[in-house]
Image (cartoon, rainbow, N blue to C red):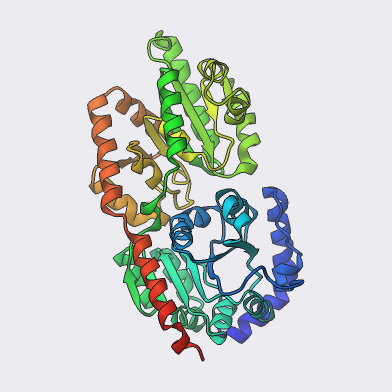
Length: 447
């Protein structure tokens, strides 16, 4: 397929695509501006500033993954333009960079749809000095417009599974040309690098995964650890659960509670489960499922209303079986509270979710069988003794309880995880150095 044909198909199908975006926005909640002018590259007035380093993080996961890079660039005095396609990604950016937005060192914008005119107008309006696309967010017209505008593009923390490679190859020359227009590519692993080169990417190097350079909020970590110490019971986090997984884990927890009550061991070893759905639009759904299962629960937002770690919040947690994590940006607090982390998105064929933050905190990790998005990380972590894979939620819950009953093994796995994360850090520094090298060369490279 040629880029011209792709653009014509995009125009023809745009009513259906926009309707799908509108339906997605209605289901997800939040402000999406699906038909807003900026989605079509139409702006009023002048931008706050031009010449920033543009970073595109499509959604929540990519926005979180890019945080160490964005923070490093801001700390070195660079200005950043951060773009998104989803409301959850934009909301996370607003939360994480509130102070930088206030100072004007960081701007946020919607990435326009991939129409030729929209992408040209976007680049003409903001005039970024360089662009960084996170993981695998390539749009043919956007990449072509950047090349025409003389804006170097970097594909950073890039990943590409074997299945994604085959799907992309079916698009023929369109994506090969698109990958070939990227100035530099920094892959997460050697396997990713080899697959990206097969698609035509050039100047490919292995830099590692940004998620190893996670900047943990030490205040949240300290408060989480203090809360767990005062709570005085065992805690297991079931984190980043996706569609269909909550119900399976809730059934498993209900079964374990019934078995403990029947055997009379419930009071001997009090246990708190923390259930943390991945997306905020599913917090109420998870609450309804907990209520239907008859599991006493308290929401994290209720604890915050009660004073976070005061006596009333602690009492509410001690009366609950499950703490429902219905806040954003508090994963360090949840993991710091926990002795074991079961990380979702991997118990259904969804590719898995980031577990590295838990390992960085020394929290032993259990993941499911579907981890295509973190294939190399899971393989390496398993070899390092930092995690185990379970076949299903019930097996994961049983494994977590086994670890709690064996403190020596629990400590060993946790230490292996934190050591493994430290050994793989450095991806951000490599990409920042590459960005600054391109900025030095850029005047000579512009057409």
